[in-house]
Image (cartoon, rainbow, N blue to C red; front, side):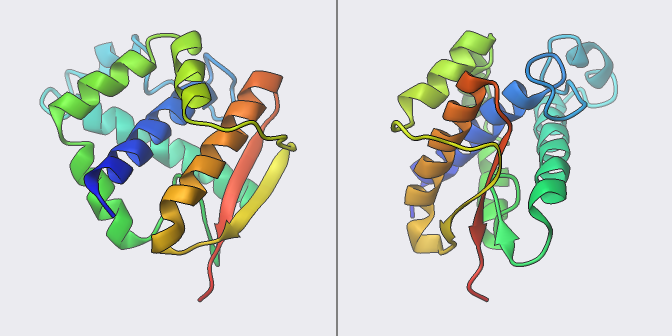
Length: 168
């Protein structure tokens, strides 16, 4: 696996996190990625505000996904294996990645456009959706399916929670 995959996971988390926030589609009750959040986060996290936003929205999204999917032998966009999480957290520390990703969440339209560009046509149902069995080697394929389900759901006004089954 390469850095492009980690960047794509990071970008997708930010975009889905943004679209799921209270001010957009209200899948989770937070606004970490809103412009107004910067005014209260910056005084507390002046050097790591983007990381605080990322961690906050990912935690909020993870909690809601876990409530719908369950915790156990499942993974989803906001909860992957520890080794993958470590790699993605390194991506989130890169200012260039943060700046680029901020352009994707400049508006609902730009965020949806990101998902549309990275998706294939798919019919998604509301609620938990099993994408398949998790494996590190299939993560790129699983991510593409995940993006497709999120795009379909946000475009139709549905809530979907794609997940991967663990073989362990």
